[in-house]
Length: 258
Image (cartoon, rainbow, N blue to C red; front, side):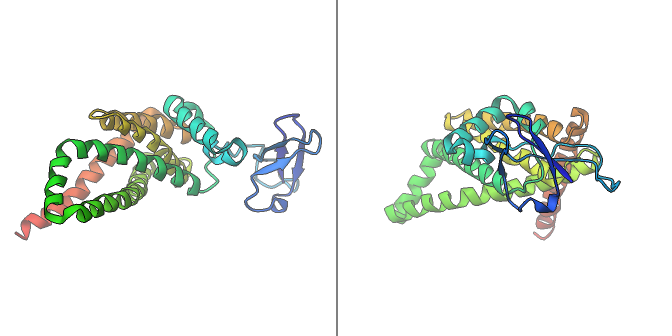
């Protein structure tokens, strides 16, 4: 049995979990008739089962409530909360709704921020390189370069999010800090991509965005996995070491074969 509680009038009712249709995100209270986000709480099984007393399954970030809040409100509120209050948004965030929604958010903001950074690079050092390409390939060739970049950036963000989350969660598990599973780690990595929007600011925006993203991830991982900062720093250190070892494993054979 599970317990459903209306946040508006506190009306509650126990129902069998299998009677809740898959994918349902909202319910209408039979008492106050108001629509609310469906947050399921476990209750003690009537037959003496081992589910235990009520344990909240977490809340959804505004981005995942955009059908209720509206698209722009969902984006703005998530943007604001992740950047300015990561400890709050990640502390109670659900880790049982899959990675599709955070994936979409991460690709969106990571791609936009990276495109801003590419634009400023184009105006500085990259501009001279692309000017040479324009002389060799012509205007059509230059347009193809930009189209290729616009296609490549979202793919690059997608790959780095998955690889980064996989390596980070591996070392979190090694540090005994990955309490909420891979989805918890991926959610932090995905929503922290919002810091990449700092790429809008020329020259220093990319550096500030990267540093801010790291701070968000440290706070977010600590909150979502309910662990200590010491374990998070240990995991990040192990992650850097692991990445360096992987790079060396790929580079050393190249030099040996020369």
